[in-house]
Length: 125
Image (cartoon, rainbow, N blue to C red; front, side, top):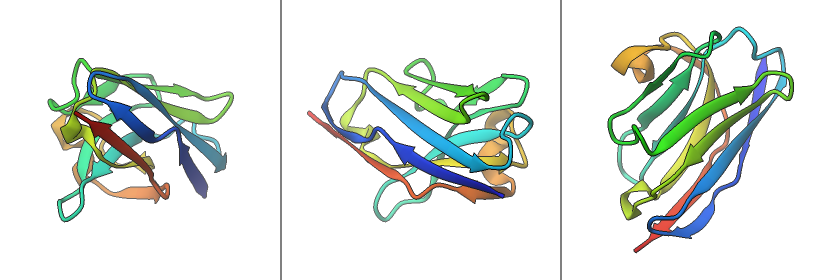
C-alpha cells in the first residue's frame, strides 16, 4: 500500500514556473513506476509523464520540453518541475504510483493502483 499527498500547486502567471511534490508513505517506491496526471473540469484525465524504477521517463507531447519528472527514492518524494507555464496548463494535478505501463505514449492507459488527492494549478495570462 502506498499513500500519496501532493503539494506545491498554486497560481502563477503565464511563463512562470512551479514545482509540484508528491510525498509517498507506506511501501517503498524504489521499484514501482510513478507518474503525473491532470484533469480539467469536464474533461478526461490526461497523462503527463511517468518515471520508471530505472529512471527512464516518458512525456506527453503537450508538456515535453517544459515539464520534468524526478524522484527521490530516499525521501520517497516524486517531483514535477513545470516551466514556461501556459493558461491551458491550469488543472488539478495528481500523482500516481504503481503504473502498469511505464513507457511510451500508452502509460496513462494501463492499470494504476494508487492516486493522490490532487493539487490545483492555475496559470493566468
